[in-house]
Image 1 (cartoon, rainbow, N blue to C red):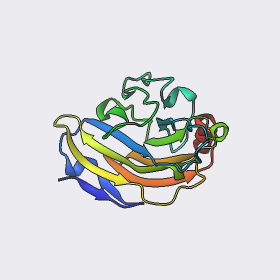
Image 2: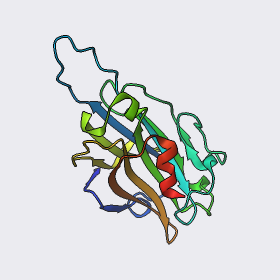
Image 3: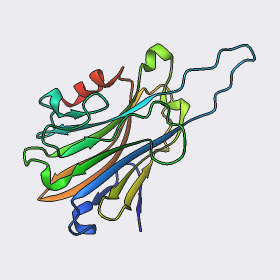
Image 4: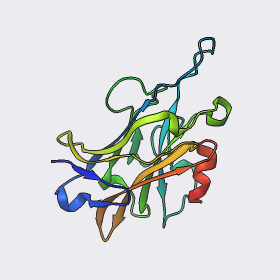
Length: 195
């Protein structure tokens, strides 16, 4: 049975799921219905982009350690982004990132999952216009959901969210539900938080 997490809560992935090697990190969101005037133009769809940031001692050392729609596979093959969803339309997962835990080199201690709105400032969009946002971890062997974290805070005027992180501690893999909103203008600005 999947664990439903609250902000700041942690779960031990290794202990609860013996032999876990492949984790599917699935992220999803829906665009909230916006009120607009009769003659107002139809707004552009909100394009959210999920990314994974691999850190060493909590720091991003090179841009090669960012896996996103422009770099779908980490050079170690340990982390793979499954492709960009431009609208978030439909039910279920919008973007997925697969982690091969045994293949993550020992120098990496964290894999941080972030979502930013593409061209948020230019399009005048923010996470207050998003609803039903979540991150869930799935056991890649059985397609069984391990845990889920639904974002419930008010993210109005936030253009990016640090959803959570998978991290290694004393030889075990754990997940931390973060849910921190930011006003960073795109992934290039957001990754500077980890440098």
